[in-house]
Image: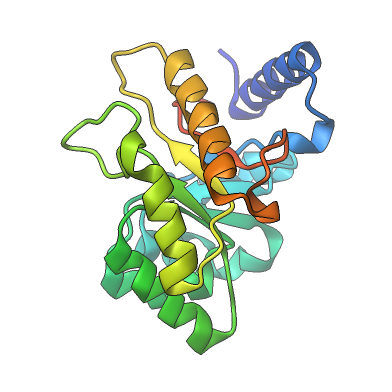
Length: 209
């Protein structure tokens, strides 16, 4: 049976093979290891193998798991964020991938100004338009991103989606890229000029243990 480190290396190899096939430069692809629900002992082999980018679903759990090693890693918030946790999220995370409503945009903008710290922001798009899942529906993405910039002074720099579990992921990833191009065209702003470097985060479960 493969151990966690061997599994991680297999995933990295698959990413590199895809990167070579489709052409983005080496630094254009980042593997985010989802550490939610795992204990410190489970995560340690990945740290020892050089993994430094991790994703967490909840602010409180991330604090408990990472406070002592916070300076060693890049931490993404990949779970839904409540507005009453905005202050903690801004203070603790490097990237918040789940910006999806104006109330949250307002809360994040206030905390960014107050703390003088601005995590990178991605807008979550509900590409499957699943009622139980968070995220802006595709048709509303342009207007929401424009409102984030215009009304709250935020600078979202990419998009995130979690495809429906029962559907092929590829069409949803393609839709996210299409939305990114559409938003870039509608905003006509250098920060959103579409290129291979525009952050697109594709949530997909790939067991590593």
